[in-house]
Amino acid sequence: MKKNQRQVSEIAPIWNWKITSLCAAFLLVIGIAAISFGPIQLSFGSIIKTLVGVKGGLSGQDRTVLIDLRLPRALLAALVGAALATSGAVYQSVFRNPLADPYLLGAASGAGLGATIAITNSHGNVYSLLPIFSFIGGTLAVLTSFFISGKFFAEPQSLLLSGIAVGSFATAVQTYLQQRHSASLRPVYSWILGELTSANWQVVTWSSFYILAALVVLISVSKQLDGLMLSDEESFSLGINPNRLRIIAVAAATLATATAVSASGLIGFVGIVVPHLVRGVTHRVTNRNLLTIALAGAAFLVLADLGARTLLSPAELPIGVITAFVGAPFFLVVLRRRRTGSA
Amino acid sequence: MITVTDLSVSLSGRQILSDISLTIQEGKWSCLVGPNGAGKTTFLKVLLGTASYSGSVTVNGSEVFRNLKRNVAFVPQQPQIPQGMTVAEYVMLGRAKKDGWGNESIQSRTFIADILAKTNLYGLQKQMVSHLSGGEMQRTLIARALAQEPELILLDEPTSALDLHHQIDVLNNLQILQQTGVTIVSTMHDITLAAMYADRIIVMQNGRVLAEGSSSEIIHSAELRTAFDDRINVFTLDSGRPVVIAKKDEH
Image 1 (cartoon, one colour):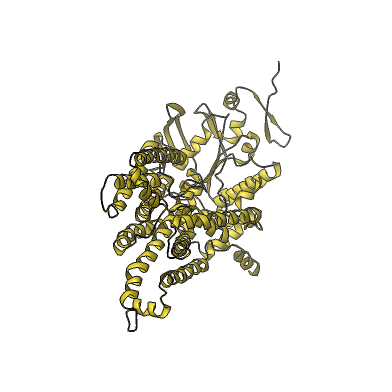
Image 2 (spheres, rainbow over the protein chains, first blue to last red):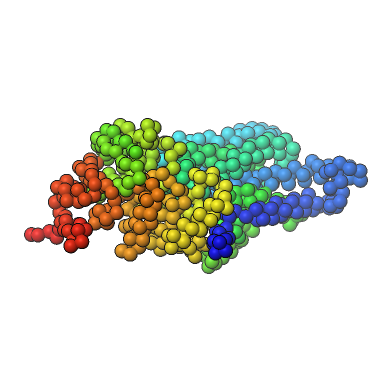
């Protein structure tokens, strides 16, 4: 009996909730830091009082800075970070490719083309239309990739290749348009680098609707996604309809990505760095860590945005620069550790 | 009992299986033998429910195609090996059907520990599956199939990656499983081993079933020799055990 118990304790449960809770706590701390720091420092106590709605909270300009600027921005950063990290992790499982990123199926290039069309064809304030155009562009590009690959998911690789082809095509059209309308170069370029400066409650509201819906779907199928790492026959024998699961997963991940791109432009590296970071630290590849990846992605982007706002204050760095600048070396360290480590 | 009636399969215009009618008995070990390209693996995929076919393949009256209600374990010849998954996690996937995805019970973990011990994998549970040797991977696949507690287990060349004594270990494990009432269908290149373990042998060639019957009658049949273009010899040892070896071409 004793021997048997020792055996069982050796077969650890597949996921440990402590790591997830730790990430949630980390996100909370980073979030509070993000809304306190900036050109105007806000005290922790007064922030809490304002948010809870008790007496002694912020007022006047400080209150506006908190409620109308920093809070929606931090929330949007968290949403976009969670969306990109989770989509990246899901694409990596579905395509069995560790280098798959959320922009793979043409979502990024399509959204870029949509945004360029909006910028080059309008006069005056285009920024309210930009999210809509980039959302349509991104979604259309992914649908085209699906359509071209034809057999849908008979071979995930064929979808991947058609995504690359559609992406290149959209980028070519975008470059052509930019050349024809050289005045649009700067706004398009700054959009491509990614920015959260346009965050307001309206953007937060509609993007949270799509992103949270997609995340609920992805996290609810996350345990089954482990089965997709096997061959289709094996996953079928374990009770999964692999094609149906792939379609659900890719559709939800694409919705999250397209929303994120249209709300904040192209923010690179989050979708690859964060999933691998979580896997590198936990030594677990299982998709049960999807919630952890979402929380870590949110924290990562809130932190990156804090850096973007404060490093060269009062000037702002594009957040995409921060994520790549910090993300790439960090990523290499994790990769190296993983190769030499016990995993 | 699995009833196969007028089964045909064609893939992109090529006929893989033609007009197969037979029954596979419950609790027996049936072995598919035949040369490469005979359609053995496709037949296994039909029985699993993932290959589309014409004709009918039924278990207790319901068609097997895309039927996720059955509990069928599948051991492929060349598995897709996930990166970064431990042996214990890999074997635990086998509990998905019984416990639901991600709800492994304590009892299941006890069960997995027992299976790992039985398949000589205990001690390797924290190893990554991608770092296993061919033989260890094969036993891990068998362990996952055992964890499934299936009604039917399908194995595609379960011994081809193994050295001789591990072949016997794996087949013995399957035999113990069979004695608990599980139906086994496997393909096997080694006809001597097939005759040693299987109750029934199904001889296939070019997508057709040439003969089907008990191992002892099939092993000496003309159909078996025909399937291999008459290039095999069947000997009988003093113990009465048949041995099948390839003929050396005589020019």
